[in-house]
Amino acid sequence: MQFLTTRDSKHLTEPKMVDLEDVLYIDSDNRKVVFHTHEGSFYLIDMLSAFARHLQPYGFRLLDRVNLVHLKKITHFDEEHHKVFFDRIVTKDSPYATVSFANGKSYIDEIRYWIEQNRKMQNP
Image 1 (cartoon, rainbow, N blue to C red):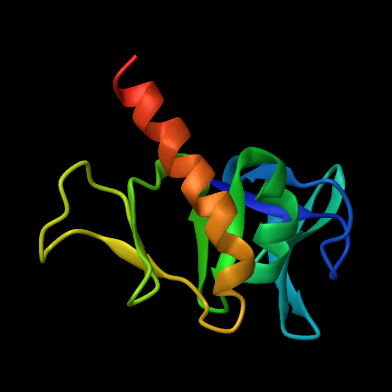
Image 2: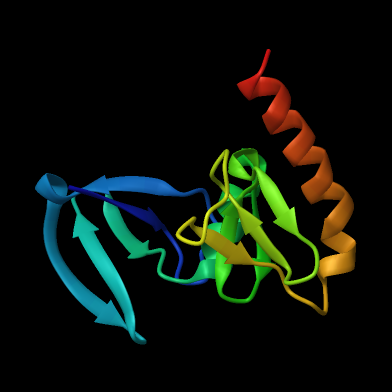
């Protein structure tokens, strides 16, 4: 089992995967989980905002306070309800993520772009 970590508690340094087999012990520092190995100490990335910072180059965006969305997986955007979908055919059971109403307008062009790109990739 591996965990996504950084060397600092604010998660500003490069992320590093820490393998459970390399962990000497685990403790907490200011309510943060810390893995201790022979290479040093590593803080578990446990906040969406930290994931967003490190995963943005891979196409992930915080579209709402509660979700981090992989833009390359979006297939549909319901502009009325501010939801993005990931299935080729959307049904009532399709997974979706919400898009902030407050910031939604700033994301619409990017979401439309990625939907078009994703359709091209599905139908080359």
